[in-house]
Image (cartoon, rainbow, N blue to C red; front, side):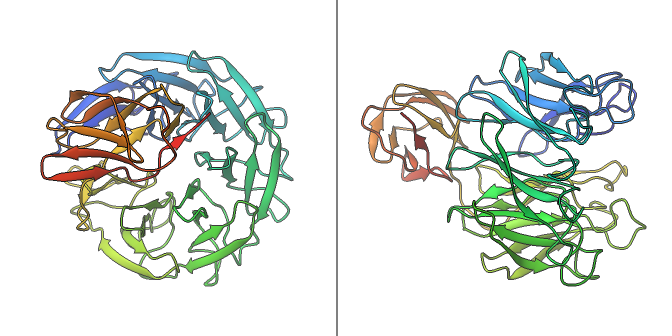
Length: 404
């Protein structure tokens, strides 16, 4: 959360139950603040995040926070190795955390970095404007093992780029936006179950420079614009899409965010072919300015998100949207070799009687009503994880990748 908190309005890390009971875990203060993105649950059971501190005395930091709220700074940026890390880091299959900084690096236009869980940072790439500038969104590790991301500006047209990089830092620009197909992508990408990469741009598209788009791009860089937003019905998607368990994509529009107040934002559903349906229009009572953080699907099937502004106190909200989807389980991490211990997250798991990795039975321990630990069994193949419950079976929302 990038604002509020008792420490000089520097933002906070919090946890919240599905019923809405919120507990603050850490409040940022100078020179820590403030966090531009969320936190990621890593394989070690703790959370990792970034605090950008734009305009502050420092260039921001990367940190670890335990489920109980113990906060540990891991790396402070100094401009030479990057500045203003906005995006939530992602943990790759090698166990390291990867992310971007909006500025700094060898050329001042931002970086891609790797960091060990202990805090040792390596700058993998410094953008030079021709290959991008100001990456805001989180990175994605695709099924091929490489990382994919976007830059908000730069590239051959100055309107932003899509890039691919190896874990060692060999970067390739896959697409240069030209405004007709979108411009200024603020968010990162997701990989859908069909293997394609999906994302949003905050501006550009077929209806002019102001409104934004949704798009699909192949891992090789062939881009298709799926939807161009217009002056009504929602525009300015700052956040990434999420593919829910029904196969559809869900997202939010910020609308008046950083502009004069026009509309208060929307939540939308998009089919794979780009057909878009508005599900909710925000108003002054429930929220203003949609969301920069995007949606996430909880293991109870509902969608959850935050708003930048609005609500009864005018400081933003946390909301739940029910779209009629059922419960599932999620693995953390999403890949691992035989013998590895994996966390399985879900709802009401206390009665679980069995766990299978793509049909192969696994040893497991019930930790709580929301967590099971399981050992990847010998002979398991890549596929869904199933948890047997009294009267039902819960499946993972994405396939678990069994690695060598």
